[in-house]
Image 1 (cartoon, rainbow, N blue to C red):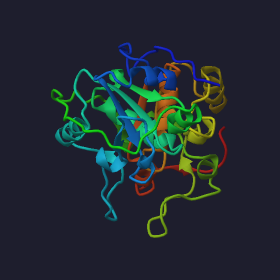
Image 2: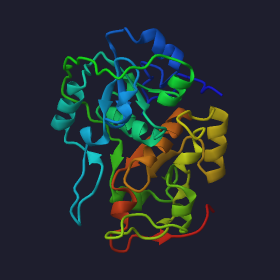
Image 3: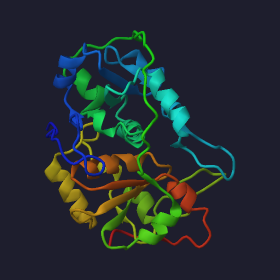
Length: 294
């Protein structure tokens, strides 16, 4: 079932200048538009099959990771570095950026969408509903050839207050008008599985007071988001009320962005706890709980 593309509330109060989700039919009709910049979020191997004109983007291109014992992964780049990275992909102030995941890793594409919104370009950014999987399934053209990319020109980025820290989360868990959402799969939220690595395991469970909206239940199992009615039912079942600000987290700040996009489509103000459970697990006296949604 195709997603119902709607022009809804943007990241805060301004209307979207473009559709938040576009179909493959729309993209096929606009591939030759010089203002449309298509980003293929994946790696060099899967880029062997891509939408004509799409530029290859990895999460490492638009984030920074500190691999030390005390460092955090997948954090936002400093503004000047982020501006340079986006310009390198041909993004200018008048661009309409269309982002899609290569291999059904919708959370990778939504992380790029969130990054563009953080950079102040959210109102000019769309997700390709169904991603590359849907594009290929519909028999649309692909190519192995990388396009020649002319660098874009952006003004100084208008960084948006979309990213919050652990202190914000501590003070807003249970606060009226806010809902802290854990976007990891149910096993990690409930405590049946523990995230992190062998060398640096996370704590078992979730931020006490957070509710669970698993990112893998928001799509059809590929890269196509469920209908608004289905998404609303998922958020309702988790206890997220209409109008509440969704403060989402996951392991590192990637899966959370899928929940953020879904919440945004439903009209919620949204925020990302970018340190996510990787950071929360290291904090002294940071409350953690196990069990199902209450």
